[in-house]
Image (cartoon, helix red, strand yellow):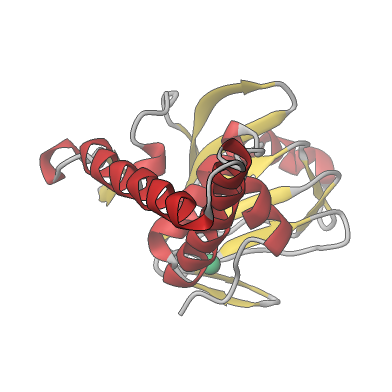
Length: 220
Ligand SMILES: [Zn+2]
């Protein structure tokens, strides 16, 4: 079961279209796996639309306002069906013998080639957000990341497989937001694929930092 969700303010900013592309993709991919947050966002979007609608037609009476709102909602529902790719168009990636279907939110992003180091592999996602880097990170079964913290923030959305750290076990859909107050060393028994967003390199807290720098660079 998913235990980690975007914060209410992140969901609210998402509903209002105020997130950067990297975070918006993260929330959107989480919503594909989480009915609970999906419902919240739909409710928030409905409120935003009602407000917009009411502003537009403040002269008309409330019955007319409701009718216009329903018409608007219906037309949007019809449009949605055209945006959802049919099954044959779902984009898959192959990494180290594993095949993964990407969430809809990641269907059209530009992925770099995979860079591999030991059991880790990552593909950069080209979103052009300066210091903010988004990646797909794959960790092979039995792999992990040495204990580290972050100078900025790190979002990890688990897309497939499982991993664990000292805070618990994570399943597909878990949306894990960490900052410089958190230290962890994630490990995976079965292998996993994650979508990650970070605005600074990892800071290793154990071992010889210099020796671990290639891993830090690979992941950020
Ligand atoms: Zn959720």
